[in-house]
Image (spheres, rainbow over the protein chains, first blue to last red):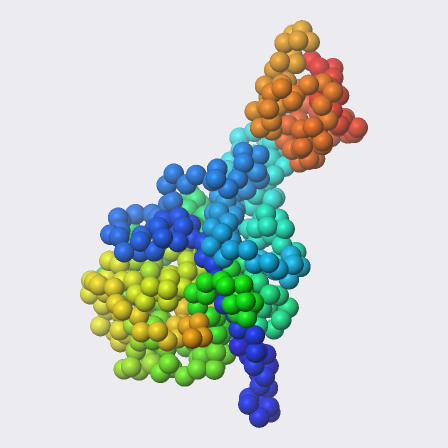
Amino acid sequence: MRLTWDSNHPDGGLRATRKVAIVGVGAVSVAGIGKEEFWNGLFQPTVPGVKRIENFDPSPWLNPKELRRYDRFNQFGVAAADLAMKDAGDLGLPSESVGVFMGSGVGGLESLENQIILAQQRGYNRVTPFLVPLLMTNAGSASIAMRFELRGPCETTSTACASSNHAIANAARLIATGRCDAMLAGGQEAAITPAATAGFTNMTAISSCGISRPFDVERDGFVQAEGAGVLVLEEYEHAVSRGAHVYAIIEGAASNEDAYHITAPLPGGKGAEACMRLALDDAGISPDMVTHINAHGTSTPLNDLSESQAIYSIFGDNCPPVTSVKGTLGHALGAAGALEAIAVALTYERCLIPVTANTKSIDEDMKIDLVMDEPRDFKKGHVISNSFGFGGHNSCIVFGPAPA
Amino acid sequence: MDREEAFSRFKDCTVKVLHVEPEKVVPEATFAEDLEIDSLDLVELVMALEDEFSISVPESDLEGVDTVGKAFDLVYGKL
């Protein structure tokens, strides 16, 4: 990871000597809750329709009193963080050197909608005193910090569907620069509410048949999903010294902005392309060292076209295998990038790239090597994971294998 | 409504809203230490009690109300 972008420096800038290891993962998604369930779920057939996590039971993580203060998105986040911390084992670090960076598109929207209905029926003096802590987006990171008594930096990023990639990237940089020794980072979302659904539907972003088929010629929009993903990131040498399992290394990341349209991507995928190139530069690698791309691949006509153009612009006819797990998971908005980062971590661990579910016939305008029909063996190298958000926010992360 | 009946309803409401054990809801119990509830919980409890007893409790009345007994007296005084 870069420390400076100084073109006058003999090496083009300073680079961090500290490496960022992924040592724990926690997934709460429609594909499953927990690492094994999530991974296995990525290989199961999907059913059309909204990807709500039916029968989610928060009671293993939160008591009835806590539940009154935790919106659904926050419940998901605490559960995912707990799973990730158990997976990481005892960090053995002072609480001041561990922080929490989470992403969320809209926070506690369900609570807000319910309280507005209540207020209109019974008056605004009946609104719960917990409304603000229920709805505020930053309750997500704060709740995790409180649970584990982590007193390092604690922030929430809200860049729509790029939120959790940005949170993970910023968290990784805090470790690389030495400010923190470990971070809990990821994203959380529970926005399958009547108003949000209407908003997405009326802007024609949602698949009319409820099928997520990224890059397919018949794709017609995304499928709403919810959940949370949390990764425990730790300074590599510290992780090794305590015998932690290292899934992969975060080698670089980048953030930029289309500055073009509030929902449509920059034509030709130029913003996404620039972001991917910046991330490769941050990692100090060239495109030929990339052996897999975990795409944003939402199944919307515009995203998938522009993302495929961005990929082709960089890799040309030497495209590494591309997959979008949104075929299976749907689009969990601010949690999507974190769930995809977990999929990447598990791809490193199991040397297997999951399929892009439901995609049968790739759009001929897309010159990418899409993993369809059957999972593919993963040749251990570097991986890019993309997330792009409404508002024109782009975020790309470059992963690498743990040093041999 | 006699005092006993009122306290029984007060207690049920408190248990339901605050998720505390019924045996802990006694007049001498303090909200902060014995029931481990904070000021936000107390506001929510008062809102529920307003509904339960069809009364109105202005925020200024809550000054110094730190035990179950004081809260009950406040409610009972408005019936």
